[in-house]
Length: 404
Image 1: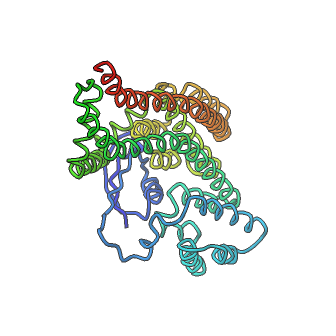
Image 2: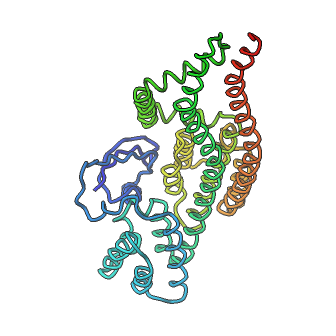
């Protein structure tokens, strides 16, 4: 059972700290509320094991996002049609393949024992996220599980498509640069040495650019394994560094301030925050829990910090729109204003839905525009690289003609 440390505030307004074990953070919230307190901050202390013999460990990271979207959507349709939960899960299990089929078999067995769907899903935290489980749980408690599952599938579909568009926009330049690097290495290792021997036979003074290319070629040919090892070591060091707390902060900082990409990153995080909060609140999840779940899902540390601040503000009975408006450098002004309208009208879920749709469309358009801009830039870069190489290799021929 997970162990939590927490900060809370009692009825008299005094702050206090504590530690408890609970099935999940939602159970912890309920327990502290029964004691007359309100949670301000929660930190989970999980015990990491090198080897896990648990049944659930077999499924870590093996179920595709698209499969989970289809599962939520189809399960909602079958329950809406009047099928009992066990039969609906059984049908989904027979239609599924691989690891998802095994997961659904275990869920079907647990439900047959009287366990709720959300409790059964908690057995597979690496398949069903906290967001997924909390929305199912809220749907069960409100008696509207069908709507909760539809909200889950819509939210996951939107997030999936958003990620796909961003990755697609970055894939093209990544592939082009990779091919350029491979072709460049092959030319330096195999083509340039042949030309070098020819130049030596001419007995002429080579231009500076030609000498630089020959020097690079000689280094790559004579110390190829050392260079490969050095590059691999550098990549491994950078990767390990980015996994640290400071590394994550640096990467998040650079991604927010990078030209073109920075604006897209801000809009992606705004869309994700709004989409998750809208889905959770619309499903009946308590707003404090909704903020906590969204904070866990959002990856960027700067956005996590803002959501933590919002969580504390809500606990004190204040409005969260003020925090969004305070951080216009990360969340656009439109987000704070729409949240403010939602708080005034009591339709914050609908307002956040509108914000999410707006920024998802903005990201879609910007990724298309970015692809249009990147293509001519890549052509210029490739042309300049090929031109420098060609001139450097042809220059000795002109030097020979001048000598004659």
